[in-house]
Image: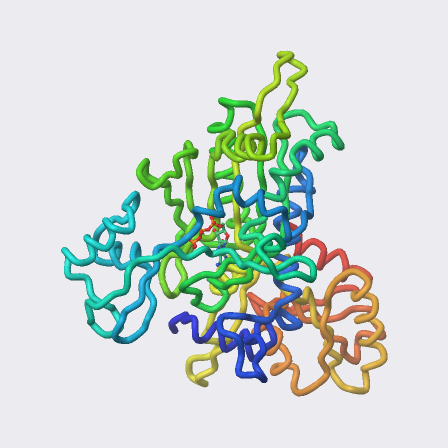
Length: 456
Ligand code: ATP
């Protein structure tokens, strides 16, 4: 059976992972709301990242900076002025296109071209509107991807501010604060999870590309000339993070940027891509950004953030390696990866949908099932016991078989059945999501059993 986006999306909507945003008002295009299971799942993804990048790291610390920042930040970062896509409309069918994308699709490369050069290329190569076939385009214009709003009561140019298009700048402007307050020596990383906003021209593919999304970013500050070493270290670390949570290597690829594709300040950049049903898509951008960002802020703010190296008695601006991961994107990749339709009994035409999520990512770690409603009180005690430690579900509706299947579909690693023997032997039947094997386990050992299962 084929894995398609439609199937994954249908499961998400039906089981409460992801709903369309503002649905009762006809929606707001490309906005999504995480439902009861989705919020657990995405929190688990974020928690896993935090565990591996902050908690288990001897060098790294966390940060939670404001979404709204002084507009000068975006001047320094290059987002005002740059960060804009070359756009044009088809005059006939009124659809909007990215000029660079049309050129790319026609086998060209718009990198480094001016708008005039792009226009000329489109004309010379007879590129037409993919929607209606017309060659009647407007001029190319710049489109700033940042959402603009106003701070305070007056809506004038002076009160204009932006919603951050990335979380990274909140880290750069706090480099000195973090270094001083934690008395960290280089190298060290500062990690942050938070919302970012980009007025994307072509959002789509479910939660893959949206205008509001969450990022998990780290800026790893190091001594100049050690940056490439750290770049390779973190590239490997990121890849292993995904593999450790169940992503198959055959569905991943590491795409190194060629010289021409590299930003002028970057020594090396690699994208970790995942093979979605709609094709390869970037999950994680890992870049050696040298001392560019701190250098720019030093220049524009006039406040110098640098590092005094007690070993060499020198001041210098640290170099930085940045792995930047989309929380929604990687969550979608884990969902797609986990989605499976398994033939249980071919003769009976019995197939089950099972989300083979790593137990650490599963919304519920277990579901407690009383064999009969008569056992609700006793099974309820087991449920209450487990709830103290984990997110667990409880289900007493329908046959045991149906209840198992409902949990398979949402990725619950184990079902715990309380039956008529349980009161006598203090044991429950634990049924495994993946193998469907059952075993008898002491109630008092359940928590340790689950703890062991969700370890990573
Ligand atoms: P793309 O080429 O897909 O637009 P990008 O190269 O602009 O991505 P970065 O600026 O490197 O992306 O952002 C880092 C990460 O943030 C991406 O790898 C992706 O996981 C996530 N991300 C970026 N834009 C979006 C978006 N519009 N929706 C969801 N996630 C996003």
